[in-house]
Each structure stands twice: as structure tokens, then as C-alpha cells.
Length: 219
Image 1: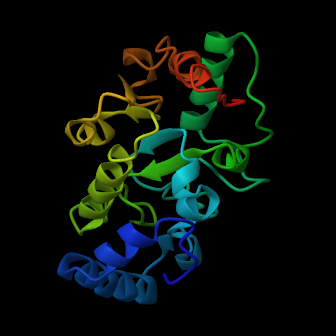
Image 2: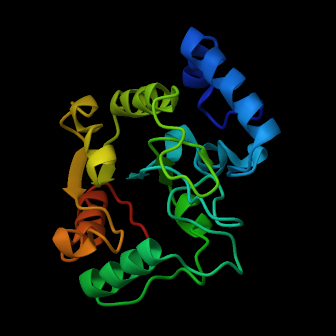
């Protein structure tokens, strides 16, 4: 998983050397060698490649990657161009339409244009075995993503954290600096979208917050 760090050097170099991450890497080497695991190995840290640390405006926190073939690309809720848009992402687009009054700018399901605007598309767990959601839970990824959230929390410029679902909500205590905006809702999955995701208004609220700092996300 060695790659350019895009401004995340201090965090990555510190975490990669810790015993939990050494053990996690050992686990992943075995998993990728013997099972179908997503996303492709080279895309595990894709969210960080597309959004530099100093550019983060919004953090969207999901659960773990899509577990069906060809879907996961290392950015939460995003799928590669040409892949059918999953139900959760369809629900996200529906909420954008309802909230902002206009459709998402995204064509298909590749959310790279958001990442390029400073939307860090992060999952709480960054890998998964095919067909087995949460299969890489409690292997160390949560410690790493806790460190990511805590590292962002220290940054003086305010940003928006969108925490959707129980796994994401568990990160809320790590966001303590008052310059940040934390918005919570149910997960956009078809199982829970009607239990508090639809109508959350997060996209408009995020832009209202960012506008005070001269920034904006074209959803």
C-alpha cells in the first residue's frame, strides 16, 4: 500500500509503523492471496489519493466497501464508471435532488468529481471479502480510521462531517473542535433511508456552512 501520501504523510507514517497496522497488513496479504477481496489492492487508499489533507472540505463516512464484483473503488459509496448505481447511492442522489432542488452533477456512480472538490469519501473499514459485508470488521481498520478522523479534527479550518448510520456515528466523539460541523443521519441504504436519511438536508446544510468560508461543493 505504498504510494504518494498527498499531504497525509504525518498520519500515515505514524500509523503504518504501529503494531496493529503491521498485523492488519499481514491479515490483508493473506486475504488478498486466498480470497476475493475488495477494493482492488491498489485502490485501498484511493480516497486519500484523490483528496489531499489540506483540501478536505467535507467527510462522508460510510461503513465498509461494496462487496459485489467491480463495485468497490476505495471511495465510500462510489462505483466506477459503467457500473450500475447501487441503491444506497441512488438514495443519496434522490436526497440531493430533494434538498437542493436540482439533480446531482454526477453522471453514473463515480464520485471522483466530489473527491476533487475536497469531499473525503471514507469508510470506517477499508476492505471486505466478496459477498460478506463487515467481514473485515475489528481487524484494525477502525483504529486507522479513528486516527484519520482525529487527525482531521485537529485542523484549524472548519469542515463538515456527514456521519450516516451506526458505524459512522461511533466516530462522533472524536470530533471535538467547535470549528467543525457534524451532521448525523440514518444510513442511505434501502433498509434505513426512510428512517432518517431522507429529509436530512445535509447537502444544503454543508454548503451553507462552507459558504461562510468562501467554499462550495457542486453536488
